Length: 95
Image (cartoon, rainbow, N blue to C red; front, side, top):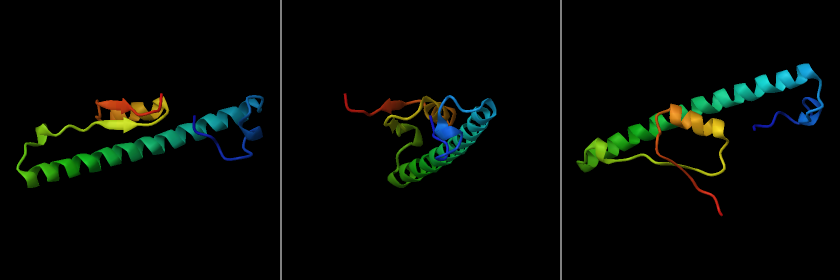
């Protein structure tokens, strides 16, 4: 979960007034939306760089696979990554 600014809604505690919790939810959705847009833009940029590199090297574009590796990302951001067209996703975390 993305945290709201410090001091907002009783410090983000669950005992915050009902309207305050709704405001926090709206704030969090806005942050996720902005993050989703950034993910989409980054994926488009990387795909463009892959196409350019494949052409320079004489390789077929389809011969290059994009695999995204995350580390403790919230599931909502992984969903944004998948929505941006990245279907090969791996989690990198110490076990």
